[in-house]
Amino acid sequence: MLVEKNVPLQPFNTFHIVAKALALVRVSGEEDVQALLADPEWAAQPKFVLGGGSNLVLTGDVKPLVLKVEIMGRRLVGETARHFVVEAGAGEAWHDFVAWTLEQGYTGLENMALIPGTVGASPVQNIGAYGVELQDRFESLDALDLQTGQVFTLNAAQCAFGYRDSVFKHGGTVTSGGQQTLGLKDRALILRVRFALPKVWKPVLGYADIEKKMAEHGVTEPTAQQIFDWVCAIRRAKLPDPAVIGNAGSFFKNPQVSPEQCADIIAREPRVVHYHLADGSIKLAAGWLIDSCGWKGKSVGQAGVYEKQALVLVNRGAGSDGNGATGGEVMTLAKAIQTSVYERFGILLEPEPVVL
Ligand code: EPU
Image (cartoon, rainbow, N blue to C red):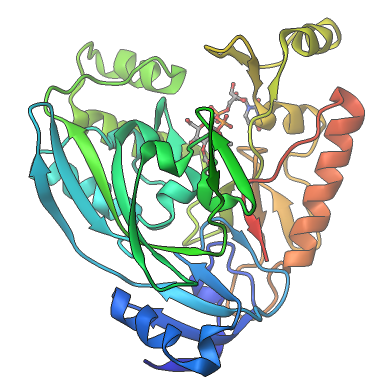
């Protein structure tokens, strides 16, 4: 086990914010964590699990011991009458894994192509795009308890998935499906994730951007590969590539409101983009709310609002020269956006990324 000191984290967070980990360990298997827990110097230290760093705002050097997950591997591990069960190591890049599943003939993840980050981070955030969320394809995961060193397995119900939410984002207790479980924030290191990919595949359509691609190509029954290619094209057209412009994807969640609240907003702003959910509540497009407050293209220092998608905050100076946005600038911008959306619509936007 090698503990590296003062490790630059700029290459390990997609915002490309300059900060250091005071101490960092690369984890390529559970034995690396066991070794750490057996060492009295490190066992009791607070720890932070770092995946692809695609959902992270660093506001200074990181004091907890950083566990950088580099657990690799992807394979078919089982089969049921209706599904292929495919497993990937937590350190695999999410998009490469999605592309690999399609190459192998396993369909079902194509709507989530090109989401930045790692496989291990995907259940934490319950990532989703174009009508498919991770929980729709999730089978189970193995994780390691950072307090006891024990490895345990969780099924979907035990992960308490919600919209961009799971048991891994909460301390204390979490209620899911009427059951109470212990929150696993800062407690669990995800080792491997298994996905149940349907043998009889049906495309998930219905999103305007995808319907537009179908019309453009004159296709009514697209293949999984076509959806994968279109989702990549749609995302490339409106979301900044983190390799070029630092960002953490959508910065805020789309807020959920009651029909009464929505009617009140529509009365003032008839054009507000909203979607009716199965439970009777209504989801508003946070990007539209921010855009209509005039934020597109605005900046605080080197932190800015992306010109093509107001829900995405970007680092305008992401070079390695140290002149990029600080985490403080990103959070000042985020707070200013929250205030103006709250003043105009009475809605407090909730940030998606972890702020450290
Ligand atoms: N809109 C504007 N102005 C903007 C941005 C959006 O008017 O600046 C409007 C759009 O025209 C559209 C609506 O708002 O009518 C929704 O925008 P979009 O389709 O781009 O999707 P989104 O709600 O902003 C969500 C997810 C994305 C996911 C897409 C596609 C969240 C927080 N974001 O974005 O996920 O890729 O839907 O499914 O749920 C992420 O979580 O990091 C992410 C990128």
